[in-house]
Amino acid sequence: MEYPLLWAVVLVILAIVLLRKSVIIVRQGYEYTVERFGKYQASFSPGFHLIVPFIYRVGHKVNMMERVLDVPSQEVISKDNAVLTVDGVVFFQVLDAAKAAYEVFRLEHAILNLTMTNIRTVLGSMDLDESLSKRDDINARLLSVVDEATTPWGIKVTRIEIKDISPPMDLVEAMARQMKAEREKRATILEAEGTRQSQILRAEGEKQAAVLEADGRKEAAWRDAEARERLAEAEAKATTMVSGAIASGDVQAVNYFVAQKYVEALQAFAHSPNQKTLLLPVEATGVLGALAGITELAKAAGKDTPRPGADSP
Image (cartoon, rainbow, N blue to C red):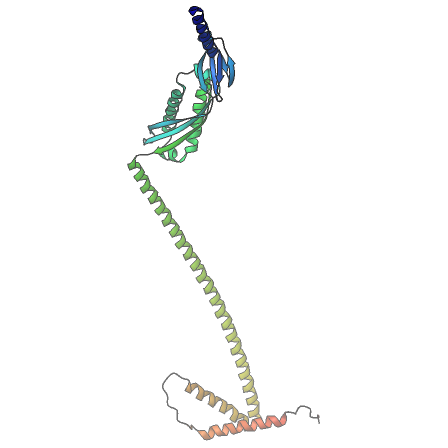
């Protein structure tokens, strides 16, 4: 009775083991490679699968999700012999589980070494200024080279990013001094340009002011000449009238003319800047006589002038 029970227990355990070996459940985001007697046969996608135990077995469990690898820091010598410390990250995804499992050994290690080698190659062909200012170009060149090299491994390198490029401290200080000198140079140039522009504008303003001033003097001179011309015409007319009066024997007109010149002479004497002493009356009789002549002329002119509204003879 004990032996059949023992065999039954052994059979049950064997059945459980066979069932466990036969059922394969692949998780989402993974693919399993299946081998028959050690040779690759197929790849199982996520889900439920059955195999014949001891003949078929799972070879590799391949992660099909996009992954990130940190590229460790390394020293790189640039084209102009500057020593740089560089690190970065690599994003990749397995597209073919069989190639990723059987075409390369230690896939992540291979990707890291390939990326580090190409970082040295790319940065070594660029000088320091290009290395610091052209990150996008460096990333694009690295991506193109590494992705092409890893295509036989069944993976797709989606992105390579340089995280940090660190020059030595003495080189950083030299670059800071150079940048300061460049900024001071630009500031000096801008200040000189501003001074030059202000001087040009000031000269243009002075030129315009001189032109306007000259135009003003020209206009004033023309008006002064016109006024003198009118005054000369008036004086000539007055002289002609006085001459006519003298010719006709009118003594009052002569007295008027002499009195006018006499008063003008006294006015000029009074306005002269030199110290003077004027005692009046100065020939007061002559002045009063001239004024009397002026009064007589005014009366005569009033008699000769017809009144408004009077009838003509």
